[in-house]
Image (tube, rainbow, N blue to C red):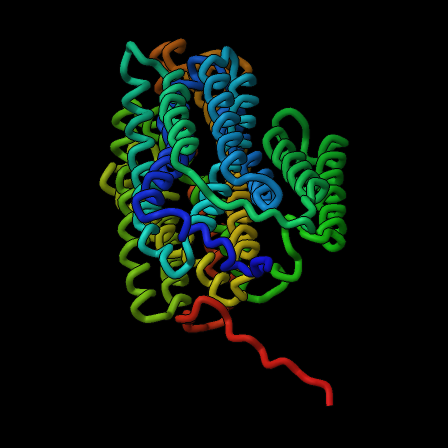
Length: 523
């Protein structure tokens, strides 16, 4: 007699004891930590990295954007592959891709090579971010998963707080240098690879009807990429009203329109339109886009502000960003517990976005001489706002969809949040580059110093190669211009706040799934 083919026929959790789960989880959490660290460790090191490679402000932005973009585009593909092939093998492949990308990035000789390496590294990061969650879900039943969530949160917090500090220390240690920001995670990733080979035994239940929407993912990635490239170069390399603008913007809109058509017809789309059209999901996506744009876009340039605008070392810059990270940690823990106790979520999302706006509004007034206490308070508010809103927007969506759609709904919100981050970094980086170039050119002319022609380009990020008088002009330009991008972040936060206000008020359900609708029977 054959065994029944239900979801309980092969419960992975029964195949693994608590100790075995912890052993496998240690490998998963280690590689997730390394993947998250690869993004945060460069935040304070980037000014030194781009300066040593004689890169431009645009290239500075794209070192971050490239990773965000490829990770975003490939995350849903990795998730679909997990329905077809061995989850364990896919995690190991993602680790190998990540390691190769890290090594290539560490050996980069130009900013262009570094951007390409970071884009390749992002493919591995996208895989690890998606697959670690998938594997944990395959190992641990939903009713027991909560007891392991603390480990996951701790790893994320450690990577978020420790990354900028570690990056600063590495750059400031003469016998290491900035290349070790990319090399440092390699041995840990290799250890995780070996550990998972020895400890991870997860059931693979292949679905024969799964179809991976490669075309939809490619069209979305291509459409957004073309738009970001246009944002990076418009008003610098070509005018707003030019054939390049018409070609790139028009091409982007065509690609995204084709993506919508493909997603409508795809059997299993990257972005399920029926879920996106649901009110809570749609509004949460808009709010998440805004939070992603504001958070990633604003936070990426803080390290640059402290180092180039204020003259602090990378290690000091890492320490100065602690209020931002502390705010995220405190808010996510405290607000999370309150929401669990009360079952209400909308008031805390709205409150978080109000605080986020207030923080960015304060940071929008800073210049190269602003009190560090004032800057730190603004960062704390931004962190508190992000912690109260970002993950809870996902929770709001999860509360409104049946269990079978939670994965698709959650990944869709995360997809758009990451996309918003890529757009935010690119747009704010372009604005910063324009303002810096204009101010440096103006101040050099006022001081009677001939401009180099690149303004905020290659030479402005390599301060050591500049005369002392010019260094002062460049620092003032970066310090003053940073406030303007935070004002834009504040305006973006308002967009998220408006979306959150229109979220339907609901109480979080205590059941794992929505109640079944009564089945209608024919008379």
